[in-house]
Amino acid sequence: MMQTLFKVLLKENFSLKRLLGFDPKQARVKAVLIGLAIIYALVVFAGLLIWMFYDLAKVLNELGSLGIMLNFIFFYATVMSVFMILFRVNGSLFYTKDYEMLAHLPLTAKQIFISKWLILNILVYLMIILFTLPMAVIYLMFANLSVLSIIYFFVGYLLLPLIPSILFTFLALLLSQVTSRLRRSQILNIIFLLIFFFAFMGVMLYYSALEMGNPLLGQRLFMQRIENVYPILTWFVQAVEEGSIVPFLGFVVINGLVTYGFIMVMPNLAEKTNQKGQRIHHKKHKTAVSSERGRMHSLVLKEAKKMLSSPIYALNAGIGPIFLIIVPIASII
Image (cartoon, rainbow, N blue to C red; front, side):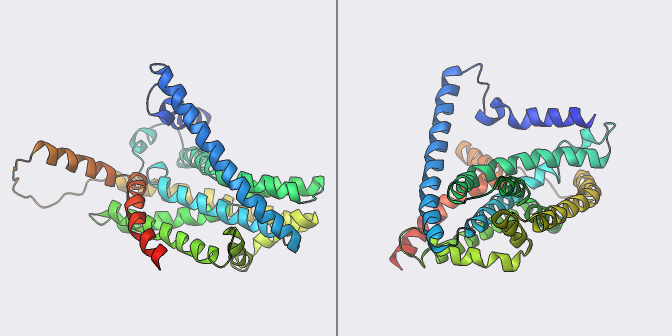
C-alpha cells in the first residue's frame, strides 16, 4: 500500500502537466517551445557554473588546496536543501491538504510520512544536483582519485545534505507551531525566508569581495571554516582525499543514525501537526458587514491573498523589487 501511495505522489508531483502548468498533449507546440527554453536555461546555467568553478579549481590545485572544493559542494548542497525544505515542508509534511483523505487509508503515520518525505527529498536532490553537479565534475577532473575514493565521493555526495535538511525540518516544524497561532502566519514565514535569503546573500557577497577576479576565491576563507562548525565534514574530506575507510564509515554511520532517529520521531510529530491543522477554531460572533468594491480592487485583492498564501510565490515576486532597491545603493557604496 505504501508503494502505491508513493507512485501516486510521484506521478502527481513530477508529471509534465505539473511541470509545465498545462496538458502537453493539448498544446504540443507550446510544450516543445517551453521545453527548449528550459533546456537552454539549464545549459547556460550549468556552463556558467562550470566556467566559474573550473577557474577556482585550477587556482586551488596550484595552491595544493583542492580539497576545499568538497567544502564548496557541501555548503551549496546544504543551502539548496535548506531553501527547498523551508519552501516546501509546510504543505508537503506539515499542514498537508490531503491529510484528511490519507488518514482514512490503511496506512500507518510512518508509512505516510516516509512516502511524503521521499517525494520532498527528490525535489531537494534535483535542486542540489542542478547547483553542485558542475562542481563535482570539475573536482573529479582535477583530483587524482583512486577507484575507492571515487566510490566514497559519490556515496558521500548523496549523504552530505541529509543532516542539515533534517535539522531544518525540525526548525520548520517549530516555526510552523509558533506562527500557526497567529493570524498572519504566512506573512511571518515569508519574512523569515527573506531574512534567511538576504543573510546568505550578504555573507557570500562579503567574502566574494575579498578577492578580485573569480568571486569564489574570496569565499574559500569561509569554506575553510565550515569544518569547525560541522566536524564530520572532515571525515568526508579525509575519506575522499586519502581513500581511508575509517572516516568514511564514521561519516556514513552518523548520517544513518540521525536519519533513523528522524524517521522514528518525526512521523508522530507530523501527524499531530496535521491533526492540529484540521481543527476548527471558533471565534466570537461578529456582525457581518457587507461592502462593495470595484472590479479591479477585488481582483488585485484576490491575487494578493493568493500570492501571500504561498511563501515560494511571494518570495519570488518580492526578491526582484527588493534587489532593485538594494543593488543600486550597494553599488554606490
